Length: 490
Image 1: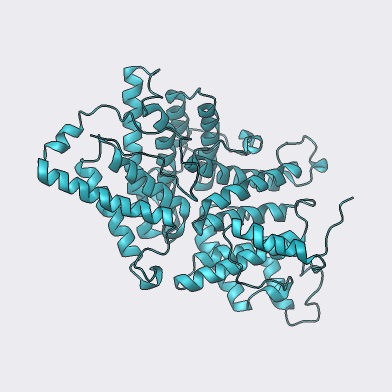
Image 2 (image 1 turned 90 degrees about the vertical axis):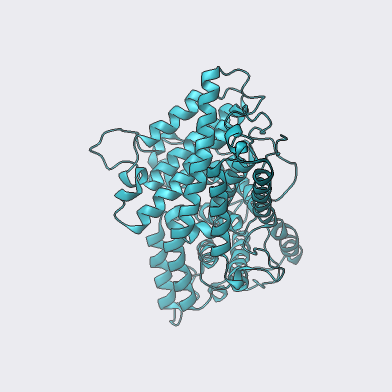
């Protein structure tokens, strides 16, 4: 029998030290904050709890539902606040370390999207991240997995991504998947009474895991690990009936991640077919809610944000899945018609992905601090800037200018810049990507000035970009080097 360690115990300082000096730095968590107090005393003031929780609810939760039971969590927060000065403060139910770990993860995510200056924002988020990890460790969560632990790990994975440490999030995601399997989430039992979790809770956790794993696998070009948790039965049926409301944003994203996993599996088995990729996406598009199809049919601001968020993810998925097929090594077995069709979808999807990201940055603060959004938008415009077919097009230059201007305007606040003048909100890799985009834009302008406007016309007739690497071709190192492209020579 594995004995569950008391979360109050600190009887093994060697293990505590190994955890803090080994695991936390791997995950990119600062060791400066002291989290030795593992109880309700580790929480901030009531005002900060309420403020960060509301930020999480309004700015984080709508774009990726991990905490499916947010109302229940809020009720428990209310009990905590009411009991803080009462005789029951410090009771076992209030000091459950599994729940406190989840709460700290929520507060860490909320802090990332607060209006504090950069230094305070990072300090607060990292403090809650470390407290969450410390409390999670104290529960022996690997030996005694729980639904709270799965939710906490998923949230911390998102926090690490948005702290520009997606490689750490990928590492943590493997643990999350294994923990879910230990809970039996990978099997749908016909006897709900024998299941460790109610069916609805198990479904929500599976969908959240697949969502996170699919988007990271797509970005890094690695085989996903959540195939066993990807159950099509968890998804609403696709129906083209005009009478129904259509897929919501969350449902559409879940379908998109399901399709991503399925076709990434085909890719790594060398059986990816262009027609099946595009048909799968069309099946989703035919069933979308009206506001996801046309932003002018939105009845509320969140619906406009959902439209462009889904537009960005959808077209980035299409472009990434098509990319191996337009590379020289991947197009040998395609007919001329299929190759032309895939290339057109690839180019158009990159353009629409960039447009959606620029638009989203202007209406949703989440897009300015979300690694997934930043990565997808920058990757798309970099590919357009590198391809000989598109680098000199007026439309590409316009998209470059719009994205560069968006970053400059959005981060003009001095609090978002480091002393050296670089964009402190971006990781080193993404800073280099933005700098590369500015350089490519300047080179394009130089070429056009020196060689005339014929470059734009000639680019239409250049052959398929044969040097674009396929999904999975990436450097062996690098924290978030998802720009797996090499500039083509003329």
